[in-house]
Image 1 (cartoon, rainbow, N blue to C red):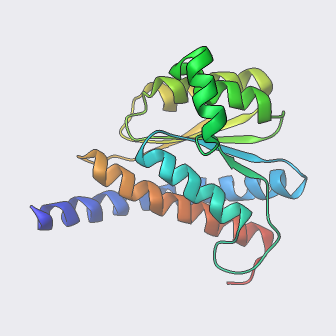
Image 2: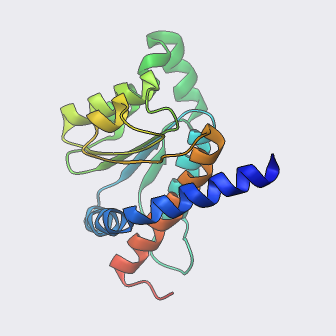
Length: 187
C-alpha cells in the first residue's frame, strides 16, 4: 500500500508539471499585484487551510532568499473573526465575509480545495468576483464547481485526496518560485 501511494504521488506530480507555464504566468501576475501594494488572500478547509497558511507565510516571510514582505492573509487564521462569523452568519459565509472586508479590486484570492466543492470556498470566490478580485483555484480532479467559477484553475488529477493535497504543496512552492523569479530574487 505504501509503494502504491508513492507511485500515485509520482504520477500525479509528473502530470502536474504540465501546469508550469500557467504557474509562471500566475507568478508574473502575483509579482505585479504585490509590488504595487495589492494583497493575496487564501482560503481552504482542513489540510487545504494549512496549505493556504503555508502560502501566506512564504509571502509575508520569505521562500528561499530574502526579499521584501508582502501582504498575504490566510482567511481561516483569524480565529476570533472566524468564530464570530460562523456564529453570526453561518459556516458558508466564513470566508466570503472576510473577502468582502479585506479584498480590493486587483487583489488575488487563492482558493484551495481537494474536492473543488467546498461551499464556503465557493462562496468566497463568488464574493471576490463581486469585488473585482482575481480568483485562482487549486483543486482536485475536474470538473468541479470551484474550478468552473474561478478566473483560472489548476485541477490535480489523482486517485486520492491525500495525493491531491501533497501535490497542492508542490504547486504552492512552484508558485513561490515563480513569484521570486518574476521579482528577480536570486536563487
